[in-house]
Image: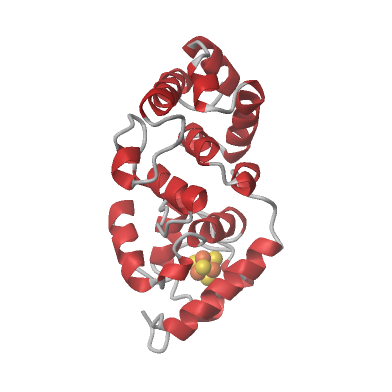
Length: 223
Ligand code: SF4
């Protein structure tokens, strides 16, 4: 990283402000409707649907399913084929349909109809990884947790906030780098930024609001 670009507390505050301004000017992100409601069950299901699935497809698939059923007992009562049809063409829709129904059933039977609020219990559901668990903890229960998806992993490394190879390493490194008050919001900030500015293959560095302090680690091609 070039001299003078270390991410101290003052510069992280600057970074978050700039990302917030960029988000305010951008289009809504994938889960925005679900996030606005902050319902843990909807968040959990929508995040499972979103895995390996385009943002627009996720939004429409989630909306179709929730229009039919949006409670654990309601979703558990649907046949897997019906869930699969509702969330199609989400990636791996048949597998996800079985997982969503099984999770809904367990929540209805073993958790009194309420999504559990611990990472260990969430990770115990088939189909739920750290990314999904942390999203539900943060947005659904306001428990500080960093949801690391492909955007968060990529941009954190480009910015030099972390130097990591896997999302798991990024989560741990960001926990050290970021004050806890930013842990919940950083996902939405970086996802929106990744969709609109810091694209995977050709980021828009020439017009990027973070360019003056970004070391562009690993960036070989940009606009
Ligand atoms: S300067 Fe380029 S690499 Fe750095 S955050 Fe902006 S778009 Fe991404």
